[in-house]
Image 1 (cartoon, rainbow, N blue to C red):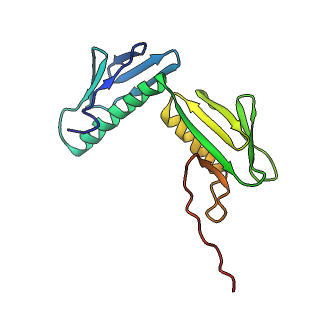
Image 2: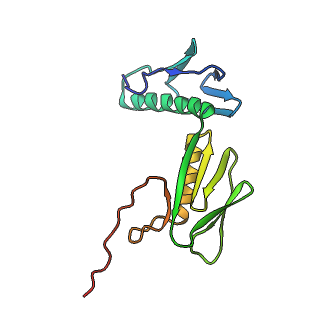
Length: 178
């Protein structure tokens, strides 16, 4: 049996989980998320615990089993605690400013780079070189953070750019002088 898929998902009090055929809805005051479970995987809820089962033991079924359980667990965590990614900006003159709900970056280009907050995502600027991406959907938080990182990837020679907090950048030596 899948080591991840066999673990039950404990539903905290105050979280409303509804299973309607293949759709699983998770609701709380922070928001509502839903996912459609793949065809052979079964989802049951009893006594505040969600269990995910599979009919056979083929490789593809085992993979879908663990995936389905992880998606449901991430939704429960998302509506209770939420997800956040802290990002840093390294470089002389590189900074970020909050413009209402959106962000505006100065990343060494001739123009400022605006980033609009999609629905369900909030930005918090802690310092001019550190900001936080927050939301209830783990995938959306990670995707928005990755797209912001893509604006100016960390340079392997000087280390300048946008990076996740605590991310280690492998530095290259550069040219050797004669």
